[in-house]
Image (cartoon, rainbow, N blue to C red; front, top):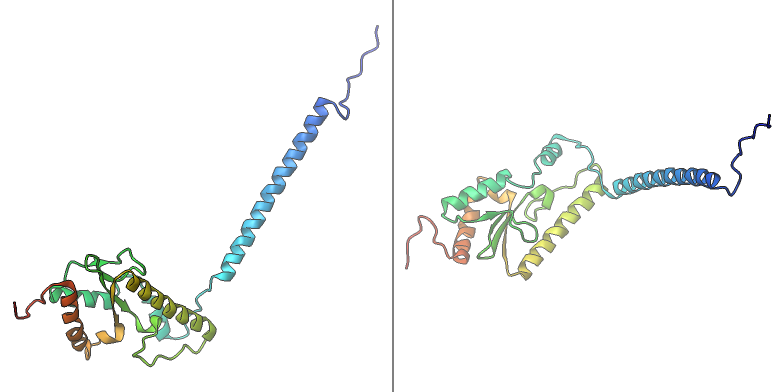
Length: 203
């Protein structure tokens, strides 16, 4: 009986051996790339968090209410201004119009807009506002950037031919709101070419 042939083992350079090595190398490479991508993503997320300032916790009730009331649209001051405009017959405005800064109230056809700004966040020039006593560096950077952005937005709108009216929150208090609109409404009426409701017709 002929001796049984021994099963040949793959040797280096054989096709089966090369395939096995190739598969192993490929698997190792994919695993390494996946691990590297995950590490890069984690580092990117850490970097993003380092660059993004985190608002500190409120240290008193006044600051807490200011932070909670910091809405982007339909704030109480904005609603009050819109009510006065409707009462005066100056309607037809648009909200958050698609121009630099997205003005709170705008008449696009006439390029007239109103910005209603909160005194705390936008650093009202009429109020004697103090700086929060804690986290001073954070708040200083935050307020400076807000003021800078407001100035940039107003300048860009002016370059585009817009007339920008700024109403501060403190100008809407009961003691001064009538005086605020007594000065503003006639100017808006002329710019918009609309008569004020209840005003005598001098034509």
